[in-house]
Image 1 (cartoon, one colour):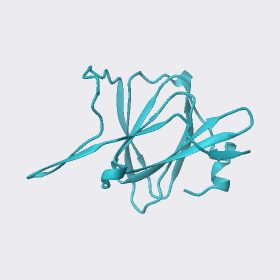
Image 2 (cartoon, one colour; image 1 turned 30 degrees about the vertical axis):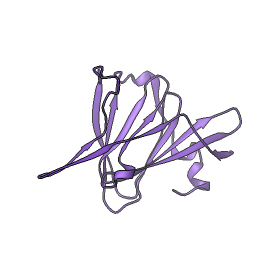
Image 3 (cartoon, one colour; image 1 turned 135 degrees about the horizontal axis):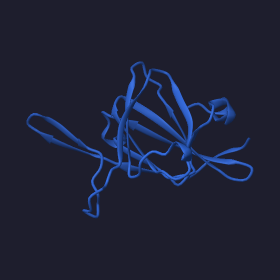
Image 4 (cartoon, helix red, strand yellow; image 1 turned 90 degrees about the vertical axis):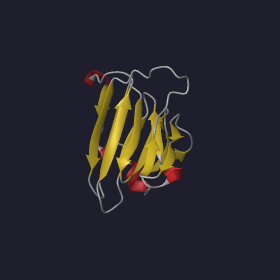
Length: 151
């Protein structure tokens, strides 16, 4: 299999930090059009230290992943006829330059990598309800990206 680094169609949207006298406010999302977002699902999942989840693929639903605690590497893959293009995103709850969310459109494979000694808490919000018929999980070894690349 061939893996080329490039753009997969996913994007990192930078969050913002606001300071007040009692602590920081960390904003991850604001609808830029000032239209109600209509979030259909909002859920947390944990990823234990030094673990990797994936591969995951949604054929219809867009994922919006952020970190609620800890840090995380998201690897995305876009499949072409005889190769993959990959892109890596780094999220860190305590780093202003790496705090925000990654929007993953449909038909992009993604994997979540935790490389630290503490678990990470991941927040996913979607604008459509989960339908198990449009999502699939693929064994990490079935797309051997991590045999050739380290993150």
